[in-house]
Image (cartoon, rainbow over all chains, first blue to last red; front, side, top):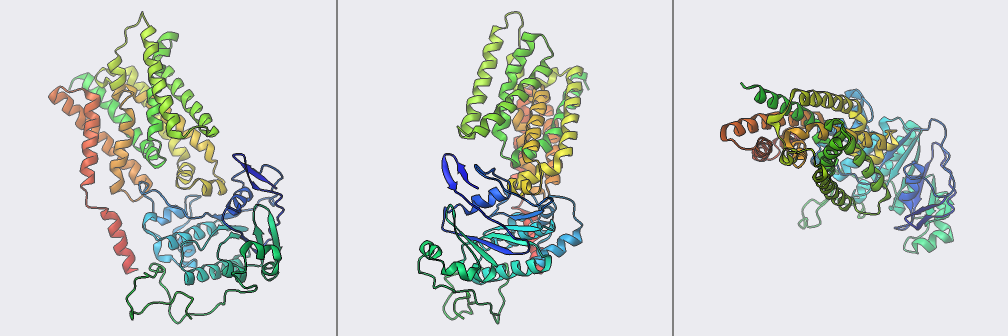
Length: 251
Length: 273
């Protein structure tokens, strides 16, 4: 499959297979065409060359990158979740609780934080009971410890629903731990396969340099504290000696 | 009460009722300038109606819809930024209309009435047009409400969830064209969008759901029509502009509502939960 937009070639000879029930992660440098590839797979943009085969009746839950609802449109989280179709309140509440933001149901969408919005989007995708979850940078705008949480949440949702997951991410080390297979993209597919194998692939090393030792993976561990989801951005100017929560790097 | 005042009030209230929900969507979808462009083209419809000897109401509807369709096609090509395109079309259509009217030698047209409205001259036939067009527009809007709202909040999400985004978008444009055409008589082509935009914007702060905002916009619009007509009667001012001034006044009053008290109430609830 290939894609040309406005005379510029975005994607070339992409040949990709998304397996059911697997977490497939799309990585690549900025401008590699990751989001464009997702948009083609979702059917939002027709490919210039080639075709996208979807299983018949495939239901996709999509979580776009960053969404801001204009202040002029008054809408609560509950209404936002049921835009697709009418859903009983209890199910909405359950879906929000599942992604850890159960208290947001009756809030205006504009009042939630970036991290909360990501979870609300995830809940909206889950409400469709999708066969495939497509996530565009699910951990964007979430701090480092929060990112780990997001990827763990995604993995646990996959286990519970048995849906496939296709996601784009920049968080290389986190991705490596959370994915069943990794697709490394730079306008074409550089390499693909099990995370371990991809990280040793010369093509991957060329793309991301040696800044990351091969095989480095996120180490799943438990904090002795928990970040609340509202205040998860720790101010850098926190006074010395104040009880500062770790950001995931220092322990 | 004199019959013409009653007709003016009826016509104005019906327009305000339809303009509320339609105007809300125009505000949400950032289509204020689009509406303006359509309204500007209405004058061309007037001229064509006289030239072809068909009902002016009908020809205005047809011209507005044709222009809406042209805009859809041109916007798709993305050769020009949307606002540039709208600017070109709005003023070309208006000027073309004025030029065309100048060619009509046999008919004398009260240009001011078309530009700024002549609500006091609304006839029973006009009222029927407003009622018919308004009812069609309102019913159709209710019919596409859910998919249109979904597409307005986030187009890609809606598309992935199976909403026919392009189709409902075009349908909505046609509804705007219809309402502008039938409402022209009340406030005129230059002011009609204000009757859609201002009450909707004024309703924002008191609303927590899209439906609340739409209903409240209708209500505030009716208030503006009533107040404007009363003022016009009282001080012998032009009716259309008086209605718009009243709407602007209501908007300013709404600005004085304590900063997002609804929102603050919501956050208090969240802190407890």
